[in-house]
Image 1 (cartoon, rainbow, N blue to C red):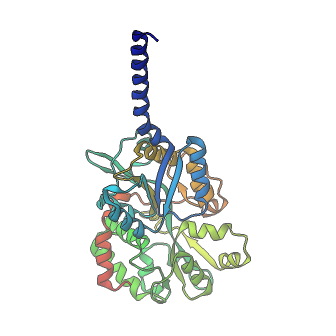
Image 2 (tube, rainbow, N blue to C red):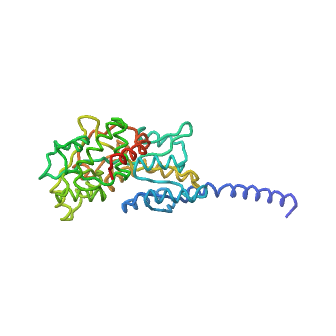
Image 3 (cartoon, one colour):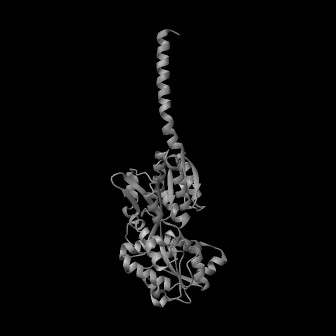
Amino acid sequence: MKTLEIRKFLEATALLLGGLLALPLYAQEIKELNLYSARHYQTDEALYSDFTKKTGIKINRIEADDNALAERLKSEGANSPADVILMVDAARLWRAQIDGFFKPIQSKYLESRIPENLRSKSEPEGLTWFGFSTRARLVVYNKAKVNPLDVDTYEKLAEPINKGKVCTRSGAHPYMLSLIGAMIERRGEKATEEWAKGMVVNMARPPRGGDTDQIKAVASGECGVALTNSYYLVRLLRSTKPEDQAIVSKIGFVWPNQKTTGVHINVAGGGVAKNAPHSQAAIQFLEYLASDSAQEYFANGNNEWPVVKSVKIENEGLKILGPYKAENISIAAIGKNQIAAQRLLDRVGYK
């Protein structure tokens, strides 16, 4: 080979190698995703499989409750491999934002698909986290013991007519903190504290257990009325197990505050992790969660409402619940009120 040809060959090889060296970062972005998720629903497997099938991006998952994920993220610091963080409550999402776990991003697609009151934004950096599905805080009651007109608002649960009838999970649980945070936003802290005092007086037993436990306690007659997230109720409505149908036959449900402010709505959502090594893949995953196919899955596969209103719902359990009026409060504002909510509950002895 002549000297000139050798030189040209070497120059071409150098250009090719330079191009290849520039590829791994992007190639790595689109092939792998590290997901830290507090969603513990087995049905989410289909969601992740569909994303990988459509994009070729492999999902590596770490699943734990929100507190465990937060501790892990704190200990990992800037070396955290997390790309996407998913959590299941406005209070938890807000706390993750305050703790600096999210990286603000720009996405016109997400901004156009997710309603403004169901996402958080840091000015001027960009969008921080997004709600991808919603659930309502419903009232369930024992049909043999309680008149639904006596429990058709959150406020009525604290009235003397319901003394000795009310059951809830712990006041320290994020579901309760978010409800209290919403009430503070709507009614102010003083009025909400008076309501909480009435709830403590009206307890049938000390707060304990999860939402399904509250429903079962209402069916058994231990409680007359309780609060539950909607998807727990829908699970029972869709169940073919005789024991679940026996529970359903004994309870009724109410959409609270339909003549006033609307039912309290919470979200499951997430965002891009602050030190995400695969940030482009992370954004792609979040955008996928806002797609029609993923939104249909949230409704039909996991009994949640999609946040994209044009998505069609085929879930018979959700259809049984029927239409409702939702409160119009920023989810981010509810999250911000959680500290005041916890202090308020501590003051009144809401365990």
